[in-house]
Amino acid sequence: MSTSNIIFFGTKNPRRNLPIEVRNKRAEINFQATFLRTYLEGSVFDGIGGNQFEMPGYGIADFIWATSDGKIDAFEFKISNWKKGVGQAARYRSYATRSFLVLPVEVASRIVKHIQTFQSINLGLWSYDNMTKSIVKYFTPPESKPLNSQAQATAFKILNRKSKFRKLVESI
Image (cartoon, rainbow, N blue to C red; front, side, top):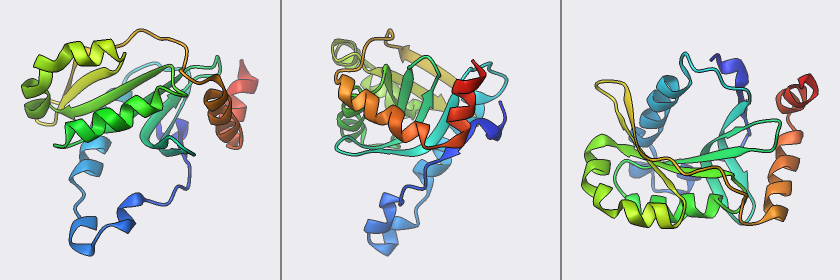
């Protein structure tokens, strides 16, 4: 998968709101970038991905993958604060077909005991091991209708403003 299928949404990075000593720490961004390289490498996906997808009222998803047939997968990446990540990723279910929390393998292996919580709210739990470049899928939720059809329609309006996404839709 090439980066030609990745959209930049132009969202202001929320890290700019943090104090300077915290804002320049890039561990989460680096974790996300290495995960996405592994996730997208060699995979055949029919869609468009994008970083920092801002959905008014629902926050900023770290990454989304959207297809022309109306499916959106939303991803939230956390290095340590998994409880905060659960709250964020759960909000994305309002407009996404599936939503995932991706954690480092050391963190995910400690919280896998809470897998029933993830299953009950239909939230995916994956981990990524940077050393082995492997993704462990503890729970992958089945595709389901977003919780809010209006929010989903708004998400696709935002996507349709991007020419790459419009070209994908037109090609099918």
